[in-house]
Amino acid sequence: MVITQIMYGIPSNKRPDVFEDETTELEEENVTLKDFDDLIRDIIHVSETAHVLDGGVSMSFGDIPLTTFSKTIIKHLDVIDLLKKEIKELQKKNRLIISRLRKEENKEKELVKKVKEETKPQRRKTELL
Image (cartoon, rainbow, N blue to C red; front, side):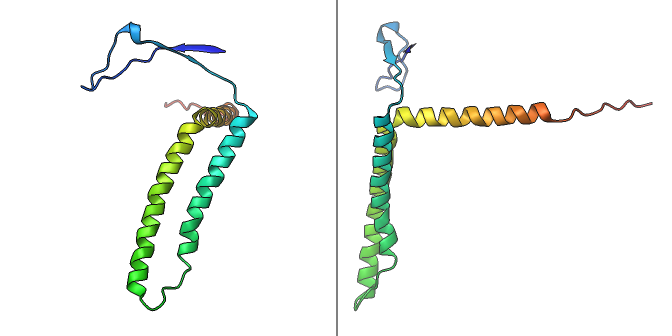
């Protein structure tokens, strides 16, 4: 399935270009097993990085607790920054499958909502005398 979309560039002055010579054609591909594999591997990688935070809260601080505590907090903040970058990269690399999964989830929600609306009993209209 080929979808043609027009994308307009935005120059450095933050005003959108509206010239049609800058159109781009995007081909929408089907999701493959490799896409699922990549997504799972990326999620595992992020969870392994997040495990550093989990293990750091159960450590002892030894003879110099304030220095150790300070270094632990700084390391945790570094790991949090790293997690932000890794999550952003995960979303960028797996954009196709994530968008398909969200679209599928939204369709299911809409279907459930539609079924609920159809099965609601209709209210009776009362007339004032």
